[in-house]
Image (cartoon, rainbow, N blue to C red):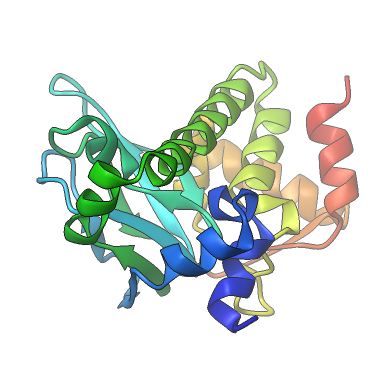
Length: 227
């Protein structure tokens, strides 16, 4: 098993597919390197295939014609996105931007359409990508319904870092600012700073410049999720 297949066999939509399908699907794509802040695509862009995250983190921003887009989530290695227009047609409805230097695998629409049209099983497996997206949306909603701001912040921190399931690329921690964390948790930057300070004094995290390291994930989980 090569490194690319190892990434996508570990977690995410493609990890739930048979190995033969996984290898065939990965062969359709090409790797693309992204600097922090680079857009993968924006809301309103034309359809252009699907993307799997090989390394790094990709921020998800959502909104409507009447609302400013907000940062909702950060996806990590193994996650896939961009399937909406592939499955239903139309334009992009979300914005995806690199939250840190990242590598993605782009499977273009031109390679997907022929197989979607002639292979029902291929189409059915690709449609399961939407299930993974729904799980993410449910997770975002669940976290935002936590009434206590500190517990809500802890839950969001665990979600956007995959609770350590995907280790950070840097030993100093995940590339994540307090402003980004506050936006995702609906907590003011002042309160984020205060809450993170509490977590740090408890030995659960360490905070550096634009980075957060998780030192005691079990304690964070207990605090966030146990009544």
